[in-house]
Amino acid sequence: MLVNNDIACRMSDGTWLYADVYRPAATGRFPVIITRTPYQKETERFTERAHYFAERGYVYVIQDVRGKGKSEGTFYPFFNEARDGYDTLTWAAEQHWSNGCIGTIGASYGAWTQWLTAILDHPNLHAMLVEASPPDFFQCVPYERGALSLTLFGWLLQLAAKPEQTTAQIDWQSALSFRPLSGMDRACGRHIQAWQDWLVHDREDEYWRAIAFNRSVQDIHVPVFHMSGWYDDVLVGTLANYSTMCRGKGSRTGPELQKLCIGPWPHRLNSTSKYGKIDFGERGIIDLFAEQMKWFDFRLKGLSSGVESEHPVRYHLMGANRWCDDVQWPPSRASALRLFLHSTGGANTRKGNGRIDATTPGAEPADEFTYDPAHPAPFITDPGWTQLGGPDDYAAVEEREDILVYSTTPLEHDIAVVGPITVYLFAASSAVDTDFVARLLDVCPDGYVMRLNDGIVRARFRHSLSDPVPIVPNRVYEYCINCWATAYVFGKGHRIRLEISSSEFPRFDPNLNTGRPIRDDEEGVVARQTIYHDREHPSHLIVYVLAH
Image (cartoon, rainbow, N blue to C red; front, side, top):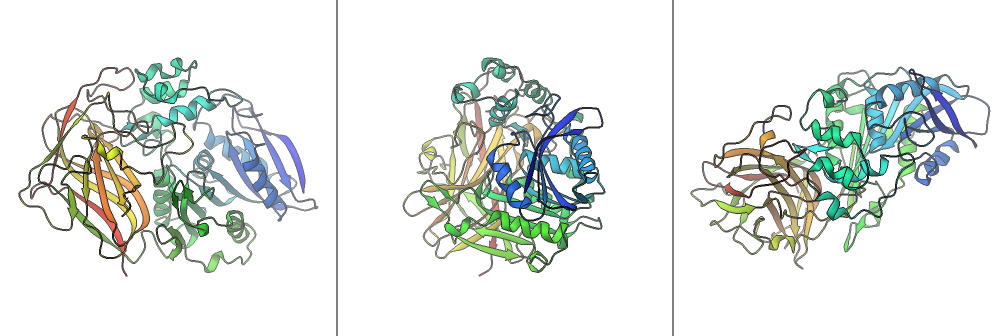
């Protein structure tokens, strides 16, 4: 293997970006795999994979994106990646070691760089391997259904300078509680233009549409291997992109040319399948490089690697701790189960009388709670940005009066819930704007209340991400809350649980309930929230259950 460091690549605007090139120590031309990153190309997580592929007959290129590492220019998230990626593919196709057959690979930001490049339809791009991919920029990052992801501030803070800055000295609880949000960067001793711009563009406007790619995904003419984890905090992007490309009309799209793999993993895929006391088994960790090699051997070299005979969908079924194969997502054997919310008006806390079952509600009293944005309900997570939550124990959190808790009776047999999780909530608020949060959990017989997944909706964005409309205080509205997906076996004796609240701090900015723009809003108002579950307002949870 030969390694050439800091090879200059000239972009179409004259800016020089720099890459490290790992290639076989042999004469000839080889297929090329490219990853583009803001996280410094020399780090071990990149070089280890580069060695693996270069030793097996590929040229592997790791490039610092514009304004990061050795590359020239100013780093500003997202907006330069499409053209820079296209220019980089053109450069790679022209090199003496390249046979012109190029694939791309990368996780998280490295997934964005791939999608933004792919929509430009480069003729030398033959395959992609997209790990931990977010969706469009107003669907999950930095806003989810109108709520701002505060933890992304930490990501911007680290990348705001060149080279990357340490954030170890930051008191995150204090920093993320700072108001107004427009002063958060100054309070940490920085000015971050992207943060300021994100706050100004607090809806899906032309700023975000300029870099949107989801509308173009089905027209991308490239086979894609999509990878994610059930505790990947951008899981929704992988599932959406896979489903969209399976409906694609291109000559190299469609279900037979897409592959999906989801493990019991956090955002850094395949790094662990054990979280504290929760262990999803040794089989949760796979030979990741070997699986990726099979994909590229088939797609870039035309070899019979076994990929061609595999099912397109592979997922880890947590709880049973085994891998499952299927021909589609959601699985072909999964059917929808509708569970309705019930109570006698006292679902507050885990000691309340909230329940969920398949019985359609009749005349039932509503549940109420008070949401104070100065004291938001917590989302259990490390205060940094590298991983948002896991299968954490929410038993103590459920002691709060501002969390409604609805549970099944103990299950009489195992139930495998595999597929999307959706909550339809009929709710009213005393405020002109507020948030509603839904969370799916497993109540274990030992009292551990394990988070599976959750979702949020900001009331004024209930119908449109581009045209927010305030709510009328105390009027009942129906909200659809996308809690993404899971694949989990609720064991016999366990209970399925749904939580309803109005905040998840520090994952999202607590809604101040004023309806004013979030950038300079400082003082919140307390909201009285009412959750209805009667014949006219049948609030319910929909999950997908595998047939026995």
